[in-house]
Length: 154
Ligand code: FES
Image 1 (tube, rainbow, N blue to C red):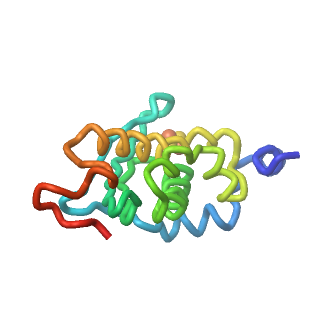
Image 2 (tube, rainbow, N blue to C red):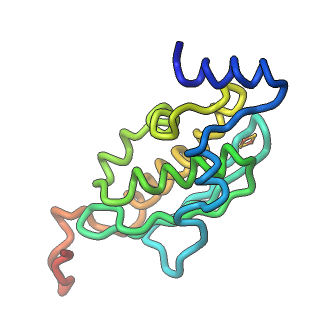
Image 3 (cartoon, rainbow, N blue to C red):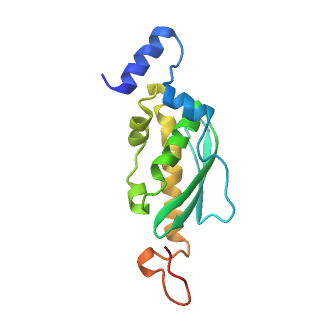
């Protein structure tokens, strides 16, 4: 039985949604919540199934995500999985971050009630959209980023 199925079964047995300690910790103490001035990229995406949304802010240094902050209007599942997603993405290259999936976030969370599994999509969709926005803005890639008076990024 998967972690999601276990939590769903437990939720059914007790009659309310059961979140594990990891999710509760990230909900009560969200990491990287907030906004940043002058982000290198940002994106706002919503979940059409529930109307909640997230705004993602990224700073990118030498092709890696150095800062990932978020603001969300979402349920506890969205807040906790967004917090987990920031910890997973910071330090990764943009290509590596694009490969992160909501299933990766659920796995890192140790499972989530299946009715809340879609909430983990918010941060991943926001992250991926922000990276796409970064690439389509005037930011050069790390390989082409030096020249014309621009300092090398470390
Ligand atoms: Fe909307 Fe969780 S129910 S993000």
